Length: 200
Image (tube, rainbow, N blue to C red):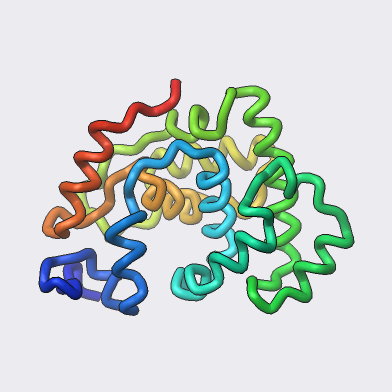
């Protein structure tokens, strides 16, 4: 895959946008911009878990369905899901019907509640793992920080949060600016990151 492709406006974008036209809007408006909203952070790490073994195109196309199915990833509500909700989700054709990942999301919601009680917010916890850009953006799938975060999450009882899944989460939520230097969005994300004040 080329490191750079031309966007609809003719300007350079990260090469993965070339997979499908639908990626451009997500890439330009969301990917890499810093996020400190706990529900959005929880949503993203869950969706990255669901993506494992699949393409992001599949998950992005179903994202609104996921949001409806999981109460917009309000982990306080998801943590209360029981067998009835699991059965409902396994019949929901609008999402990825994978029992292990569904049960992991419910488990992780309970772990998220514990984390908020301990740390004050998910944002406060996750942003401790803010990562410096790798030397070769777009060519790595993990980082020292993602390995450390994955290890700590697993220690806390989270499921489906391997280093690659966690790194994709960090890329998307702005904990690292992995836009190619030639990408027209790189500078915009960098400016947003400079203005952003991580929760302390």
